[in-house]
Image (tube, rainbow, N blue to C red; front, side):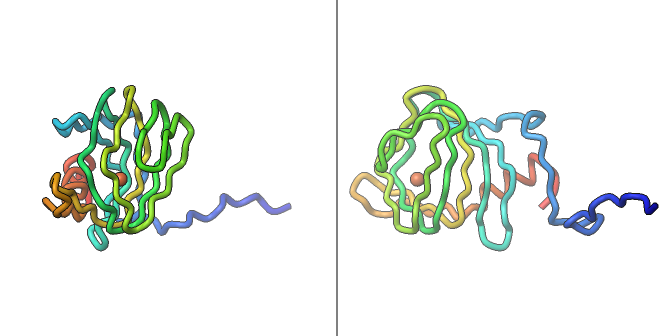
Length: 148
Ligand SMILES: [Fe+2]
């Protein structure tokens, strides 16, 4: 009788793009603006990124426009945003062009974010203050995990 073989890994040994992150062992990276991050992945090629975000109770994120789609899974707490009230367990999808005027977390909230394009942050008059293209997430990722 043949000996059962282990399933082949989908990644070649030593694949530099394969990644396994122990989120429990990863420290929160305080941004100083009411949010803390655990950047789990960031693409040098496209600027896309995945992160756990912990927002303090009462946090209000700056108004912004999504220049790429994004989705979010609320792991604890709740998010109030243009789409409504999203308690723990909610999945949010935001298309390109979604405008978030005031996104708040009424209690401390942790959510998984998958952001597939830049974010344009807005001034009070609606003009673009600056565009975040994911470079800061890549920088934080390299600082956290020591690889690109
Ligand atoms: Fe948003």
